[in-house]
Image (tube, rainbow, N blue to C red; front, side, top):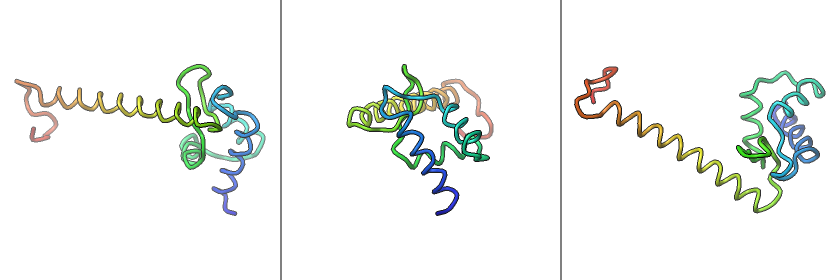
Length: 114
């Protein structure tokens, strides 16, 4: 088992014990604290996010906010809905930027050739 597999195993074990289901969501900093201080992992936030992206972990933007182990179909549906809303928000922002750059009477910006 390589270090990444060990990290994912540690995340899975912690989440199953402390954050099973959406109603038990925990802040990412709690998981990070456990892995760094109690398990001895030297990892960045990006490394943590990449590791748990490969697991059955959802994220809630509403109370309780944080990460949770997806246990039920309702947990999965909640995760899909929140990720979809986040993606739509990013897309809307990108469209507004594009409209601002391409808008009527706007000079070409940043040599985009628009």
